[in-house]
Length: 354
Ligand code: ZN
Ligand code: ZN
Image (cartoon, protein in one colour):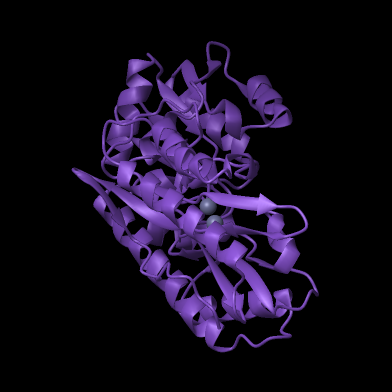
């Protein structure tokens, strides 16, 4: 089904085939999870997966299209197939190929054949709308992520380092069956929470705020969540800022429904922070799609015109960052549904003081 839909695009572009070089797109179209493969997707929906002898057994187990195990370079096998089928117009994914590879392919092309870039994100656009199988996998990744946080927080004690808590989160997540973190787990204590993408370091946690941003890959699909924990009693300033960010996050979630643009969700989040005088402290976009990759389309930025559609899995994550003080971000993974959205993340968003 995924291949047929992608093939319709290949056909609409009047190409004979499209060369898929992104491993995520290879996985999406064929189920193959190995580290080296290309797919030749034909306009009629047929496909051939090219990989090397390390994946002879695995490819047979995972893939339901033709498989070609290349004894030498993949390029050589690919071009033999192109020549054998006498095809001439072959698309390629411009954002998933480097100059050297493209030159190598171009040199090896049979006489009549040409390589043509397909519009950026041909498969990525299709991947924005998750099918039922993908939604089930994202739900599972989200559940594992929330459970891992719950277990890790039981071990949190004042004086623990940021890296210590990050390691605990990753350990719990793995024990629950995750393939690994969906990105480097962020644990930022106190003033360091003002860095939206802080790397955990040797800083000790507490007393004060700690920002935790974490995700798990389960069966290849990502989850993403940010929560705040406050060690000891929180100051009125922290409580005010926390409530403002939560109000902003809830307003953005309330705005999610099919037909509205991704940008309108971002603006809904910003409007609330502006009311609290915090709009300048919100320095990133409101969220992003996720799936086989932690960052996918749509991007929930101010000017993004992509209309939301049922089946999109997105994050909603407004935040405020004050240099010398700290930062607050609250993030859920959300599914766009027929009549609105469903918040997948089960973890509470009440202000936590421990
Ligand atoms: Zn995140
Ligand atoms: Zn995120």
